[in-house]
Length: 235
Image (cartoon, rainbow, N blue to C red; front, side, top):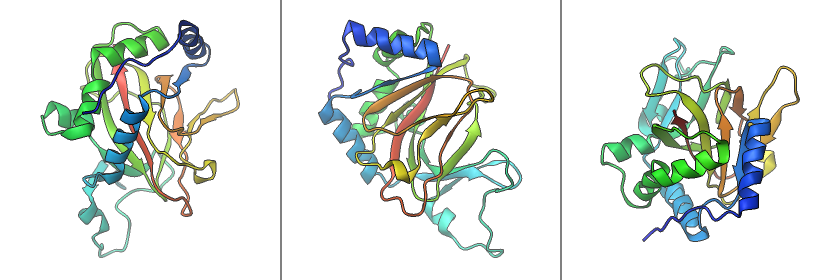
């Protein structure tokens, strides 16, 4: 049985994380899950095969296709996504929290989804960021392989979602990843140098939203997949 305990941080380390978030708008918590739990969730994501490919079509509408639909040949030979220089993304996704609420998530993935939507997780994020009144958490699993990317955006809140997005989270679960394989989360500014954060295994990245950021292109020579559990906390 997968057991998830409170993140074991000293008072000093908690203060450092909170100070980093308040100063720069982001913070990382290393070794976030217990080692056996991190390994179990990482393995479950590696073996998972019900991913959808998500992107944006040439007309600007979101695309969500299963593997068979994505790989089906098209008469015009064109990819079913836009490349016109506007906001774009291409990666594999699974709506983990939505499936939990639909009572469809099972096994290890259900357990981690329950944890990420729990009061315990809210307390950890509240302590790290100073935000206290979270009313809603959403999230999904992502898999970035060679050729995948997410261009610059701010995580602007989509219409119809409850509350106001305040904090984004990304729990990275790739056991081996080279800096040469891309996949870094990069924060962009008109006035300061960019900050690029690698997808370090079992590390929780928290950052304030809205904020311009992207996930760098994963090149053809990358091996494996960049796995993460990602979402937002709303006040």
